Length: 294
Image (cartoon, rainbow, N blue to C red; front, side, top):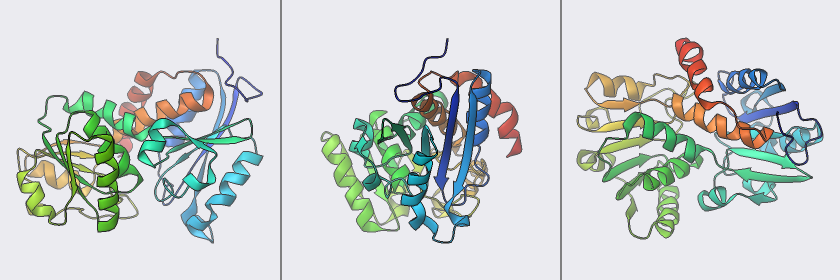
């Protein structure tokens, strides 16, 4: 029997959505709606792409107001709104508070609660795909909302040294300071010489928007990719980013962002619906249907 989450009038009807930029190819609607149908829910998932709106990301406050007024159960939040959404919320979960990054907003009883399922989704994907790799020294590229989440995940997974690079050096320094306060026994620092850091690292986690369908390109120097360096990607549209393609061609072990997309979606689904989805079924569906679409 499906339980009714607090503050939701109908146990079987859910209206949710995704706010972000350049998200027309997102697989989130299919992941959520197909699992909702399998659980007997009347589940609708809308794309709210700020790139298609006149005011761009500045429209975020109105989008939240409109979604709440229409009776949404919640919203997923992606680039570039994972941090700018925070002042618009009433409260944060402990993880979202620690990370200062929100990818899931739940509407309950007139309140907006921010959560972060990115870090745990990344961690689950990493445990499944790279549980045996050495992670003493990891380089993180991207210090925005996604970078905050996966940097936290890397440290939870046992990274002893985390070096953070971002085109905005101040943002990298701020993230390093925040994570160092949470993990005082680790070496966590911002770096500007990315090639030098990668030459000594065990692995690279990529969490910048470079490589997304709307922002193609390579986020690191190609000659910095070399075995035995492993690469874990956050971008999943496209699933085969230029970073992964080049790294594989050079013989590096890689992990794409598909699993993270599935597991963070499953965790968000539970927050929206008050019922635990079948994450394995969602993963199988992604692997057989969505992954084949590239």
